[in-house]
Length: 267
Image (tube, rainbow, N blue to C red; front, side, top):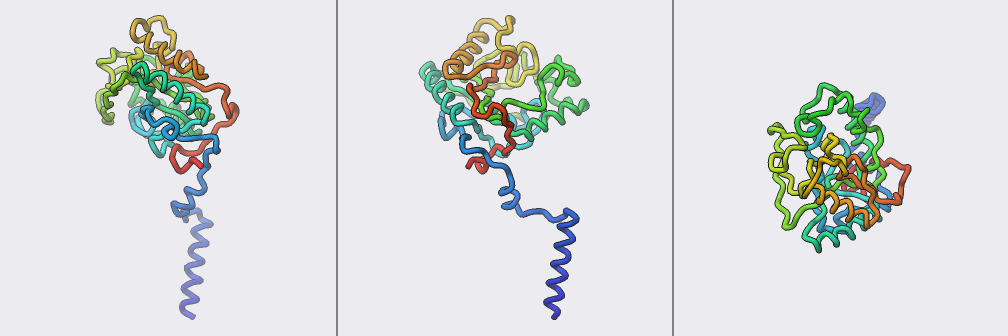
């Protein structure tokens, strides 16, 4: 009888906790409830393991200054046609002594929402000296640097650059270190191992426009190498960002996915 009373008491407490919203599902249940990627998505490494991956939003070295929501692992995920096109571009670049390096690929909607929340918090400017020195944070939406939807969430858009081989290792970013403007000379900027494009990745400045006339010489040649190589395999550049390319035609031109960036998300 005492065992029955104890069991009923435990059952009552569990029911109350569930109704109050205080009970949490076990990790396995939470993982099972996460959205999954459609079968048309693939890890880039499975298609071409030679492409360098430096997934910035899994680190604090980005314009927000912290790991971005939804980036569980430093993994490039893309639709299969986009990944195969990058493989073809990589084959061409390797013959010329270069490699592609990706900074960001598929981006879940929750990450975009993180960007939007950050942009509305005008008091948080910890990364301004590097990523948007000349832009007032209150103008990030009006100037088009932040939006509530991103083509990355459709799975065929990628942010990338080229690296001269043999590739030097990029040192880890140390939170709190002195920040240098993203448009400073390459020798002064954060020591990215990529070819000199005139600005760093995610530089909120008009110098990042692919055809900006102030970008000349080797910097302009490097941008054209990236743009022309990708154009040959079906990628279209966003004119305002030398690093931003979308593979056409998109498999999901009207769908914005929100599955996390992780191996578990791939079916």
